[in-house]
Length: 265
Length: 261
Ligand SMILES: [Zn+2]
Ligand SMILES: [Zn+2]
Image 1 (spheres, rainbow over the protein chains, first blue to last red):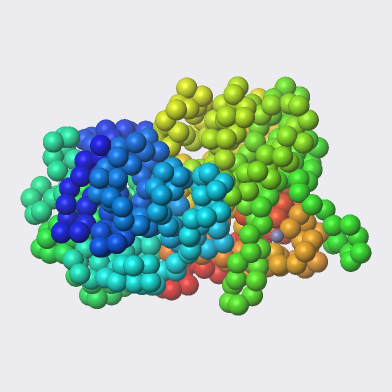
Image 2 (tube, rainbow over the protein chains, first blue to last red):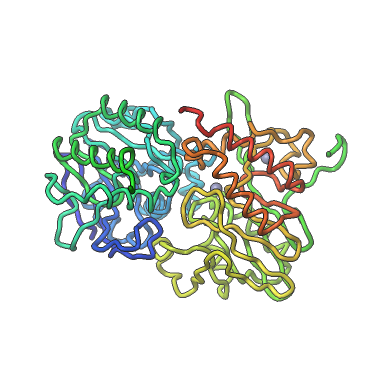
């Protein structure tokens, strides 16, 4: 079973923990602790949205946990990007869940063409693409909007839930690991947040281009976004989740400083 | 340039002796105009061993499988070299490793134990400068001057000087029958910097925030160390005029850099 924690009355995070491995391409080599690989389940009465399908190594635990939460609802899968933490179990979930649909952000690739699955599933499962900025009301989730990410590598979307105020941020805000396996994935205050230098090092370990970036335009887009959206929770696909408006504001401020104000000097 | 009425080439295509190009072209629209983009992989056949550079898309596995078996004519693939862990580049690694039980998965395989937990005993981790010895030719692991995911490697064939550049040198072509398997010099028009836009702005979206000259310097350094006669991108036609297409790629990078500053 994945570790399951509840973000709000209808939102769950499924975390599978991996020890910090200096060989992980996106972690600074001095990282220690445990990295949560997060999948989110967003429940409505008749349907459930799964944000990320997780890495293949966690397939069994994810599917077992999913079945318990989703029950007989229609399962709609939405990977935020086509990286293997997002689409790693797309094929096996599509093969194993009887009522399933797929939404992707791909441009030219057919959504079901991203992964291997049984041929009968490839022919029968409903799948479509969405573009950034589109709302998910048509897919059965009236409170969810897609958001254009400020920092990304691949084609990526963020998702904002207007009801709970939670922002799902894919691979951004993903840089805080757990000191041990007992620490919950969700942090509910700002106590013990990493320092700016550590966050910057960790951002650059993943988004290596940031080191050479001209950040004025990004900073403007960042400020515009967080003037418009005041998240009450930040839910990345890797790393710790933050809940609570004050803690979320502190985290956004921390990343903003790490991205735009930090200098090695 | 290809003339009307001539038989147009199709996939798989031999781009240098014992070097084959496979591709799935996918249409999409750019400002209302329908264009095509490649998702290519390349088979490099040496005297003693065979390497596949990238794996193609899961979506087109059935077709690719047949084409590969035809070209291999009874030989096995020894190395499956995924340039980076994204669907068009490693999406068929699983079935390929099933089909060729002696094959090793090679590349910058950081994180791959999470993606292929049952294949870890067949991983061969590579870094820049490492060499796959195919007998009469070597495939050198080259730093990926332009990449999306950090654990990307390019490849260089020492015999025919083919540089495999993964997401580098992308360009779309027109949605017209017969253009898909044409090289950069055979297309009825010369590729332009605008044609690099769809891939650069998508997979390489970061290039808009980085000074293009820094990126270009990295590309030129790779070209200096590994001078290509042919450049083989995953998302563009095979380049038989590297100098001209390097200018196009440079133009594409300059075009997006600072676009929203
Ligand atoms: Zn690619
Ligand atoms: Zn084509």
